[in-house]
Image 1 (tube, rainbow, N blue to C red):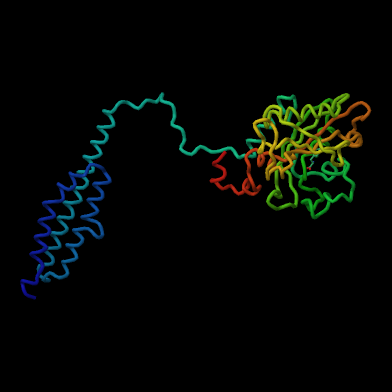
Image 2 (cartoon, rainbow, N blue to C red):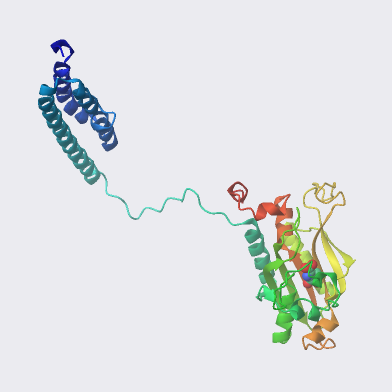
Length: 354
Ligand code: DAH
């Protein structure tokens, strides 16, 4: 191999250049990251010193050992320089920290960047609970897995009622079922306590239903009151108050006769549509209210005397009213949510809007 092809000289030159340059380069770094980047440019896998080392294979065999030693020596120098500069940078940073104004522990905390959101159903549930509490109702709780008698029989459902069908409800092997409504709490409260009483029961309910407006699991809130001489007028008063507080003062309410086995008379309650309300209070009609100006929000009625009797309460002494609403429906109307599934998909783009 001729001397002109032996890269030993070139390697020597490259080593000398690097030796002269590395320390000023390290010193020029103003942050730990910049220093590490600079170090990687020299010692990294694709670094300058590594490139020089790669040239070694082309050097004359007799000069390889000496060059190898020089490369290693420079490598150690570079490593030492890096460590030294790192020390210096850290010392400087520490010095700056110590001489800066002291950290004020009494400052208020910063607001978290992404605070959580309440789910629209939780917002509505809490609001409705607060509203009824102000009217003097207390919360009564009960289990999701229920006896058939509390969910159906004692509420006056005949044994062949479609709701009791295997197709419509979720039954356990032991003959219990996931409650299909919160009306079961009426039975539980009336069977365990003496009137007068005024309770609400918010809770999860289950049905074999699944489409744009029905989910197999959803939420209801039941309210009922039993006392002497309770009439439909009391029920209407509570409903008017409910509509006023939830949808704004003087929101019109109407009762439409309807059938539920556990009330007599029974009714469905509509409130004047909140979406197409005009400034003069009239309703223009819109797709949400199907151009009727009214939106159905709940079912209600006077508690059937047989239901009172089933729970050991004398219907000649006591009377009461009950009402039950779906919280998803209340939330969908409140926020204009078109599909019930949105509320159970847990998509942050949806949830972050509340
Ligand atoms: N439980 C009924 C349902 O799930 C709703 C209901 C209607 C509750 C009338 C009541 C009532 O308390 O009086 O569809």
